Structure formats: structure tokens, C-alpha cells
Length: 122
Image 1 (cartoon, helix red, strand yellow):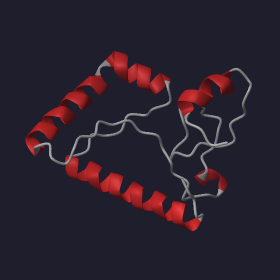
Image 2 (image 1 turned 30 degrees about the vertical axis):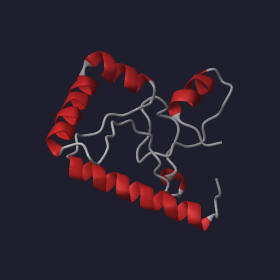
Image 3 (image 1 turned 90 degrees about the vertical axis):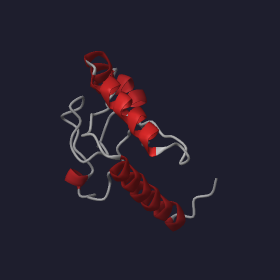
Image 4 (image 1 turned 30 degrees about the horizontal axis):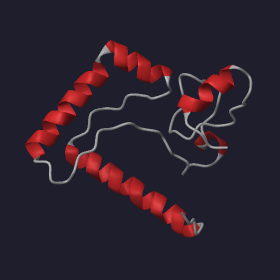
């Protein structure tokens, strides 16, 4: 099965599941003994989980930037930072709104190609 670290990690630590690979670009600090898919020969397997704040496109850029700054500030607090890391989330460098938009668009297009290739239906 393919699952996120948040739900799988407790089961892995309890010995009820065995992790064969992680789908991020680098090994997880929470499971350093588990290789990445890239290490196993599947270079295109990069499906990292992420958490973000998304607004309507109608939100003025200035307000979106303020929301983004507040979210980054909250994520940098030791309590939230440590909690997120304990669940398997790895902090990433702050991105501009344009960079984040480009990343989301690329992820959407990549996943759309997978859905089409395998004729996945809702």
C-alpha cells in the first residue's frame, strides 16, 4: 500500500507494517534505514506529502502574501515545527506565491498524466 507517514509511522514503529521505500527525494529522518524509490531504481517516484494554505484566486495578492508570511512564521515556531517533523513532514524553504503556484501546477499536470495513463475513474 502507499500511505503517508502520519498514519503509517505508528504502525511501522509497532512492527505491524514494514516499510519498503519512501516516495520523497531523500530518506526520512524518521525512517533512515528505509531507502527512497529513487535508490531502488524508480527515479520518478517523488510524491512527498505537504501541507499548505490555499486561498481563492480572488484574494488580493497583498493579503495572500500576509497570509503566507503568517503561515511561514507559525511553521517556524519550535512547537509546531517539532510537531510537524514528528509526523513525518519535512520543512521546505519558503517559496514566493509564484513559485508555489508553479509547483502546484506542475504537480497537478504530473498527476493528471498518471490518471489518464491508467484510466483512473472517480
